[in-house]
Image (cartoon, rainbow over the protein chains, first blue to last red):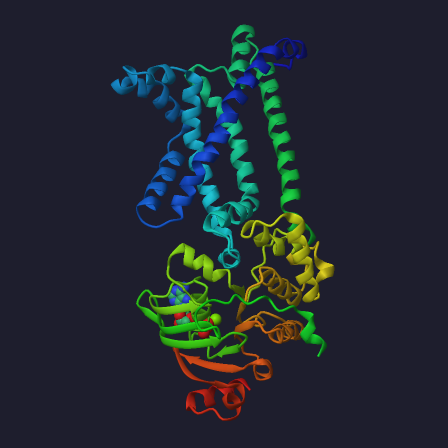
Length: 229
Length: 261
Ligand SMILES: Nc1ncnc2c1ncn2[C@@H]1O[C@H](COP(=O)(O)OP(=O)(O)O)[C@@H](O)[C@H]1O
Ligand SMILES: [Mg+2]
């Protein structure tokens, strides 16, 4: 078993196509997951029915493995006649759509918990100060609480993001050829497992580290007030 | 008196109701769950009057001051600020808050914003002023509390006294006619206390209305028109600062003054 640079070079188009699929799955999931997580996190901080709903949502989607969720969305839902016999069949038979739905649900569960934690860490007195200065609750949320929460949760978000990058490989279970699946295809044709998988790992490593550098820069910019203090 | 000219008189908002009354509180009751924190509070504060609230910890001073700007909701009774009754309706709350500036014990500056941005934040968002105009106003008030040199710094780079003065400037930027202070110097080291009290004395001399919770009895004696003593959620005694300190009529106030003086 040795690393074969020629094979690595020749399989590069396949692996990069897989990388493209990985991003095509990942980017919408990150956006949609964040948008979905925000109202859930806000409901989680209220009292009564909304909080119970939000807590159940978070517990459920953090608890169910994303692979199981992907199978359920891709193979399970079309068994229901409301999906099978309506226009929904068209969308749910699209593997990309199912990947987005499944991973977004998982991601939003984790993100809701992260955002909730960030909002809870904002000192109430600071929000009161803004309120006393005449900001509306909406302004206080979007212009003060969320920007402050974002600064607190950078580290947790970075972790979640890196885990998401790698968990996109679950989508090969529903026929999508992402980076991991592409490496596997090369293995199938060449009987060399080592070269394509190590190359794929290197590509993941690059993606993850570019993101890490991005986070370091964001942290430097957003948390300037801590650095100088 | 040089100090008098340091802070401009914020234009008092005058309304149709008795012109002389800034804050009028009648039969105010406040509960936290089953616990009654304020009991039948009656208090009137005239325009331009400096009222000091004192009393032991837990007597309801913060609750009272926080009810006035609706950071806490009162359960019964009425609060009027410059003639506007403070109901729980958002529009009334907003109208009342526009008249009030609030300074907290813990400063409560926005930690991720520079000193200047702290001061312009509400000007830009609540009053929707353009940035340049907001900056001018902020710099003017920062100069009045002697922290103009710190405008580009973050709160964490300032001393406690400087932070509290920024908090005062931040509130003054919105040109309130009434300032509420809740133990503004209690979190400060002794050297900083003086710098904040001096600013407050200057402010008191400008004709602004002030309600101030403080344990600084020397300050109270110098600036107060009237002192109010609270205990267990009730106003026990109130009077002009002369009479309050030299001839307290209740045993409870006497005991309290003996402790703090
Ligand atoms: N948010 C709250 N929930 C429950 N009890 C409170 C709350 N805020 C204050 N209290 C109680 O109300 C009483 C008065 O508190 P406070 O107004 O803070 O007094 P002071 O400012 O005079 O020390 C105290 O017994 C305090 O424990
Ligand atoms: Mg208090």
